[in-house]
Image (cartoon, rainbow, N blue to C red):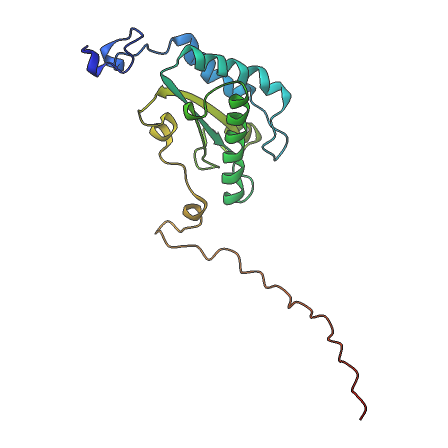
Length: 195
């Protein structure tokens, strides 16, 4: 491969991977297994301390593959409102990213996004399926290439997209909440002057 086409000129790798080292099977397994060990407080984006060893291992993996960027994708089960689940999935992925940044991973080499309940891997009608759907996935991709989560699942949805009908029209949503009129402080009148 000519040097001008080699994305990783300092490290050997096949032309099929743009001259960069390929991710070893053992590293791919570490990425796939990681999702099982990332846990959060119930209904929150606060990592449980049991998640730290796995995230530290993934941070070390990033230093083994300096030409790669990590994608973190958060997912939820179908319980609750769509927009709440989307926010929760994004916040959980961002929480894992923040922890990895604290371990020295450069910010430009790690990206997080949330998919809410839009990409289940199991049946949400059963508790076991819901547990599998509540997950944070980790993937590596060559820096400069398309994000691996987007390749796998498409662009992450936005809350406004979730609030549209299948025909693309905005949903009615909840009725606007009317606020009670603000009570005005009583106005004190100045005493009338005597003439």
